[in-house]
Length: 254
Image (cartoon, rainbow, N blue to C red; front, side):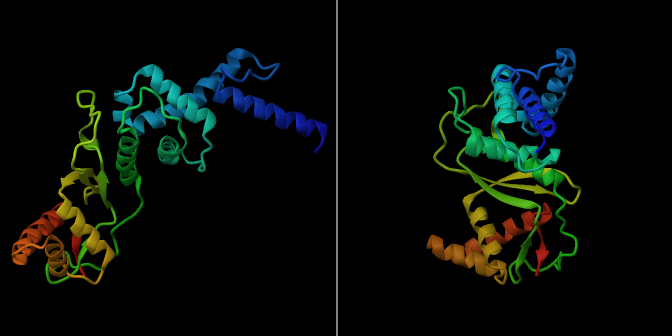
């Protein structure tokens, strides 16, 4: 590499390092600070804007100082693996859950909250489609296999992340976990539904056994519960399956 190329490469490194963290890295020599400030603000504000828009609840419960420090550290130290702005939110989740050093001001549910907020964004922007799936929209949910929408995600959290706000900041996880389905309906609106453990178990069994009928899945659950009257579980489950079909979580049967 020629000396000229080496000097230019070094200038690029200095330029990028200063933009990421101007307090730690001085600007390159010979660059007017007024012009440099345009780049400093433009790059950071773009990243901050995408993260703020993707995690509004987290931002609302975080002081402005701590929020700016967290985003700045992400911008400075984390190496994203995608050039797409829409995927910055996923990179931020990975940063918070895998790379970020915990701080004294962190909420105990922070990692779960960022994941939940990312799920909403991921479903809203997903290009996945249920078009082309071979399903009978009016099929018998007990006699046939209920098909779950690819745009419906069944999730479990230790904290009730869907209820967190400035007025509700739990410091300890409740005894029972929170089960949620976050989904995008046929109107392309992202919604969530809180479900119980039985419904979560039902959806898991059906997703793992694509040749199992709704009745067979419910009879398996009744056996796991050692329920004295399995038909009660089956009929209750049939009502749940119909509710899930009415909300576009179950698309039909195969």
